[in-house]
Length: 160
Image 1 (cartoon, rainbow, N blue to C red):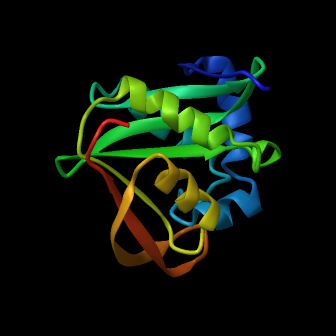
Image 2 (tube, rainbow, N blue to C red):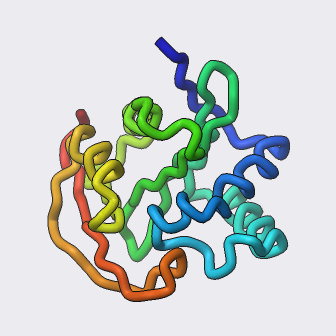
């Protein structure tokens, strides 16, 4: 079994994360992404803001010591949400599920919210397996697709 560990983000992770977050297939699946995933200056500024925000828990996900992506919680409009980004080479191996379970041990705030493009079945499965329940949908402009896209809103009320 692979060893999935969360650790603080390091400067050395940023190049790999930038490459993951501009992968066209990953961007399409995530849908709600940066306006221009290839803009390194905007990426660096965004990550600097996230890394210094007191209400953000942002962790690197490693698999057998290799950087595999990130997972975070953040507060938006008074609600705490979770988000994650897994490098495509790690998809389909249960990494997101294990990383989310580890984050839920760190972030004890409830209710906790999540959102995923409604056609991103894999991400919705990860969230539902962790105990998140679908509470509704919303439609908004998705930079990763260049069009309005439906997203599913989920809520976790109890500590798993």
